Every structure is written in structure tokens, then in C-alpha cells.
Length: 271
Image (cartoon, rainbow, N blue to C red; front, side, top):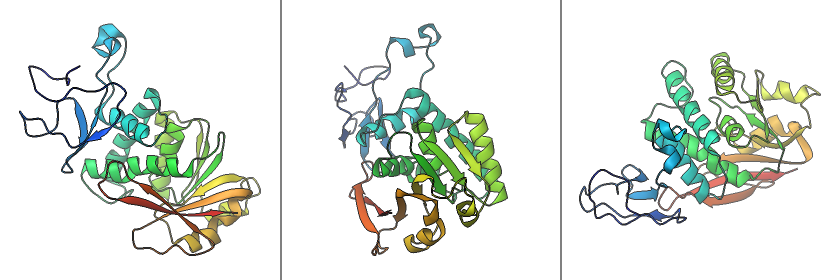
């Protein structure tokens, strides 16, 4: 089966079920193989399954998936996660909202769209694979900001119950708008500091997993958010390449499939 394009091409054919990675370049364009999805400037590509009969226009009854939604599904397969097409489209719409609001509200640091997509959305997917929360887990996203990673998790895993903890008013407004527009029924926004939430008996000691991305060092997060966790709960704090992970935390590492020779590090504590 050839790469999807108009006209002849000598690109290597897509292999059904491969879901693999390659550094192949098209000999005609000296760029991306036709039909491939990739990360600009890295020389790394992944195949996208050619659309079936139901995705060839209005007569098929299905709306073609946006390119980033397809990329998300391919990344999920590389991480051994299952992401439905409706969920990937919802995440894609979330990313559009994030970009729109980021022009007027400080949600994430300004960057090109591809950088934001990889550094925040795909990274949230990677963190989900590392957290591996059991079915119907209750998740606290501490300092959620723009909904990262909690809102992405809620979109991808409808069985999870996710509380987006964020005290800053403008970011809360974005989260409430995103949850409503995306129709994410398994996410709620808690407009409180995490210390205040931990004092509420409705939330204290009720979470299976708490995650704090780009909030504070692991020891500080534990002090502020530890009371949210059940006796068998886990706290996950992503850390930078040079940041030390000290007891009682353990270090979890995972290779980043779409980045060459890079790993994601997370400090993990089971209480």
C-alpha cells in the first residue's frame, strides 16, 4: 500500500500494524515521506494509517481526523495506551483552546505550535503512561494551570475522575470554559489552593493519584498535597534532567518515543 499522496512516489510503503518509527525521507521531496506524520526538524517520522472508505469525504459518514489527533493516536500506540478517535479529537480541540487563550492568559510559555504540542500535550500522554492509574481512579492535578496534565488525562480516560486544582482566577476561567466546551464530564475545577482543598473533608484522603507538573520540588509538593492521598495513594512529580530525586521518593524513567535519546523523569512516592 503506497503512501497517501497525489501522483506517483517511490516512498517506502506503509506497513499495516507497524506503528513504528523511522528516519526514512522521501527521495523526491527530500523531506517527510508522503502520508507520514513527524516532528519537524528531528528527522523522526511515524506512519499514519491511510484513511479507510468511511473517511473519504461526506459520503463515508465520518469526518476525517485532524492531523494532530492522528499523531496523538500514534503516540498513544507507542506508549501502549488506547485512545479512541473521539478522545483524540477532543484533545485536539483542547489544544486549539489552549493556544487561543494563551495569547491573552499566561497558561504556558509562548512557543511554536509544534513545540507546545510535544512539550505539553504529548508529554501529558507520556505521564499518563507512567502513572498508569487503575480503572476509576480519582486524580488530583495539583496546580493544573492550563489543564496539564489533568485535562488531557480526563479526555483520554473517561473512567478517571479528575479534579483540576488551580487557585489563579484567569486560569480557572480557562479550565471551566474548556471543561464545558469539550463536554468533559469526568473533570471538575477546584478554584482553591491545594492546602485549602486538603482541609476539606470531601477531598482529604480521597485521591488515588496526585500529580504536580511544573509546580514545585517533590518534597514541597508532598508537604502541600500529601494529605489528599488515600493510604494506598501515589504522588507523582515530574522533574528536570538535572534535578535530584531524594528519599522517600523513587525515580521513574521512561524513554520519550518522539524525542531522540531523551528520557522523562518522575519522582514517585507511594504512601
